[in-house]
Every structure is written in C-alpha cells, then in structure tokens.
Length: 366
Image (cartoon, rainbow, N blue to C red; front, side, top):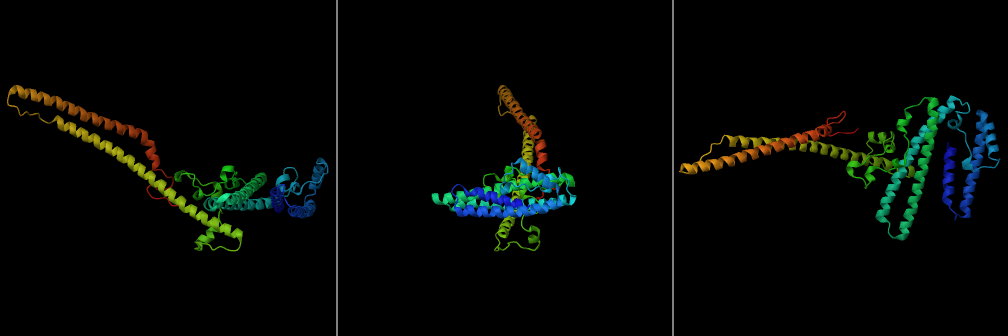
C-alpha cells in the first residue's frame, strides 16, 4: 500500500509541473519514477512467490496492452482486495490487508481534517492580510495547491473504502460502514466554528469530524490535564495539536449553541403557556364584567315619573349593549384559546421532548 501512496504522490507532482517545467524538475520526476519502478518490480517478484497465479494474469494483461511499458503510476499491483474474487487468496492475506486498510482509512481522514483546517485558516489569513494583486495572486495559488491536496486525499479515502468494501464480505465485517461512511463532496467542510456563512441555529457538524479517534491523543491529553499542548518541531504533530485545539473550541461552541437552542425552546414553551393563560384570564374577566352588569340595578336621578321611565329605558338599552360587548369579548378570547390549543398542541409537546434527558435541565455532552 506504500506503493499506492508513492504512485499517487508521483502522479500529483507530475501533474503540478505544467508546460513550463524546468529540465531539473522533469529530471527529478523521472528519477523518482525509475526508482519506484525498480521497487515495484522487486516487490512483484516476491508477490509471485506467494501467489504464482498472478504471473499468468500479468502476462495476459501485458499482451492485451500490446507489450508497451506503462507508466509507473498505472502499474497494477493486484492486491488481495482486487483479485480475491478471481484468484484464491489465503484468508490471512485478506485479514492483513483489511487491518492495514482500516488504519489507513482513519489516517487519511485525519489528513483530510488537517487540510480542511489549513484551508480555512489560509482563507481567513488571506482575507485579513493579503492586499494588492501580487499578494492576492500568491494566496490564490497557495489555496489552489491545498485544494488539490484535499481532492487527492478524498480520492485516496474513497479508493481505500472501495477496497474495504471488497474485503468486508469475505471477512464478515458489517459494522465498519457505520464508522467509515461514504465521503460526499458536501462532507469536505470545515468546522462550524470556522463557518461564518451559516446561522448559529442551523450549523451542523459533518461526520468526518465525529469519527472516533478524531484529534491527536485527545483522551490522553484530556486525562493528563494538558489543556494547551506545546508546539514542537514536527509539522505533522503541530497540525494534530491545532486540530485538537480546534475540536475543543468546536465542542465548547456546539455546547453553547445547544444550550441556547434548548433555552429558546423552554422560553417559547413558556411564552405559549402565558399567552393561553392571558387569553383565559381576559375571557374570565370579561365574563365577570358581564355578570356584574347583569345584577346591577338601574336607578334614575329624575323626579318626574315620565323622565324616570325614559332614563331607565335608556340605561337598560345601554346596559344590554355593554353586556353583549363583554360576552362577545369573552367569546373572542375563548375562540383564541381554542385556536391556539389546536395549532400549538403538538408543537408545544415537542418543545419539551428530549430523549433520555430532562428538557428543563441544560443538557451536557460527555
């Protein structure tokens, strides 16, 4: 599998040369290509000792290709994951490749996360510091190189997953796909704490950041109290440290967002309850006013009987209007309570539903 890595790097470096490469650059690529070809030829001889069937398969493939030498990055290695369905392979070979491929997949995901963090930080640095055409052009070229490395790493992971998928059936491994999922283009996104385009309530962490083992010795660093790991001379180790610190920041921000979201749900539920209580109180208040008006005796300050009768009749009509208005207002409030209960019943219950947790206590992740 190291040969696959070497071939992939060689093909990537050869593609980056471009039409204006110098003779020295071309010579270095050719030297690397020849050295890798010699190592692959030596390995093929050893492979034929343990798997003699491959000699005839390679000979037939050479005849189909017209006997022309192929580029070093096009040489078929015929690993067990590729030919076990055609040629009988010892189960130990399949198990060995499975273990190596599984570890390689996690290592590749770690490289992908590091490159995504690097790209995000370079974008922020470009936006903050790059001024003028010269600096902008250099920044864009650097970002293109990083993006090329990201795409190459993603292609490497997808190829590894294809090999794992080929081996899984023969080895009866079925749960691995829940961890090492299919990598889509949308999954190659940075941490949400570095994303300024999405609203705080709608940010979602991609699965590549939640794979078990993400970060550099995260459990060991946490248990030993290493809150701020010190940088070292190893660049890869520094990238792992940055990844670890970025994941800690991401965890804190995700926790704060979860608490704010939960608090908003509790506040919204309480607002709905108070709205219904307010409508019910207003309805009862209007009914109390109507009942008070119904038992109120009408009196007149006039002294003449005819005027008294006319005054009483006027007050009676006015009282009937006031009672009707009060009952109408009470009916409106009752209808509003009924309408809100009908529209909010399911939603109000969902606001207080949290599987395995008390919705009124701030949730904590461990």
